Image (cartoon, rainbow, N blue to C red; front, side, top):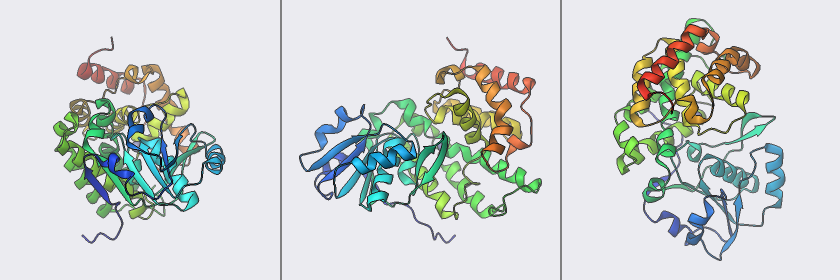
Length: 347
Ligand SMILES: [Zn+2]
């Protein structure tokens, strides 16, 4: 297959953060999170403009913050999704070179062209930036909490539910006119998904093979939206919509992979699409999808599923199993029973 899209230059190795100060354009701005800074500050030097700690993802607040940031000649993004997204927006706004350093495998933010912000509580993707390089330091990734690293698998396993959703929309004549069903895109994503499913042990252990496997998959997935002509149907579906509904309902801050993985199990159960295999994979890789493990309750999950059809319509999201099947009380009871059987009850 002829690949015409673009993937970001991605470098694996050691002491990659330590080397940054030797080559980025000075003075440089490090965009990071306050809690990460004490750990990484020693790697940077006097040639730095400043460290900026992300404190908002609100689009308007961010625009004001960017105005106030000090003059700099390059931007270094250092952290999980939020720091990397804000670093993109600074670099885009000021047209500066960007160097990205993910500190965990939580999401694919390092590999996408746009940054996620919130406007009125809704997620919106803005900007367009291609980093000079994404640096993946094995020791840095391995020093992050294992749950964070493992949870990143959600953004690949979700292709499973996304593909069934797109097929359901096709069968019902409900695909978006701009996104007709495309088997070629589905097959390409399925190859990436199969590669990750074959390496769940390595991803769970966060060893070098696991890091390369999951981050290369993220590298594909982060660029996939752009590379498919701004089409997300082969990479995202009901599992993310469930997460958005749960987030808007509870106002909680989640580790992305926990509610999304729960959404993958629930979504594939609604689709009658190898749900037990997905539950086994999620459990095997070490992502805890019990609601209590993410600070919510089964009642919240049931309520999120109840509001889901309305939520997706109001949010203008595309057709998925959420529009096609009702998650009634019996369905939710079965999901709960299976999750407890696999993970044990919450203590
Ligand atoms: Zn995601």
